[in-house]
Image 1 (cartoon, helix red, strand yellow):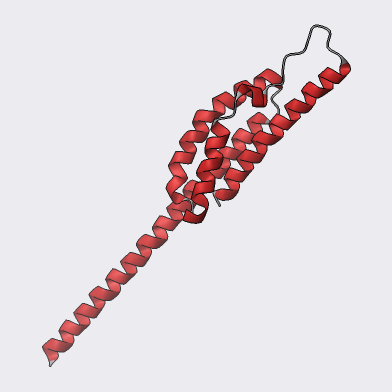
Image 2 (spheres, helix red, strand yellow; image 1 turned 30 degrees about the horizontal axis):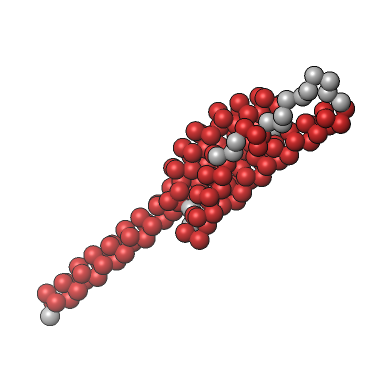
Length: 144
């Protein structure tokens, strides 16, 4: 009888220890995942901050410099994104990385540029900035 009680006590202690270890592992994994997503969101916000002050040709240059960084950061946290957001996250990341120069840079001004043409170029520039910022914000949203 005494031996049976000792075996039960030992078995229950092992069971509780295993359960607590499993729960601790789950909490640690989640904390690490949250940390990686937090770093991702900070990196993407920094990229958006670099894009905001860029003008015309420098906007495209800044964008091209950010593409490898965005790809790298997206690949680091792709598995941390919840499954119902993962497809939209990867689609948005690929969309950001595949913009063409014509999507970002307005056509060069003609030799006799009119004020309307310059206004159209400026409008295209602001639309390109807004498009890049919106795409980055969507990625941040999916990484929550």
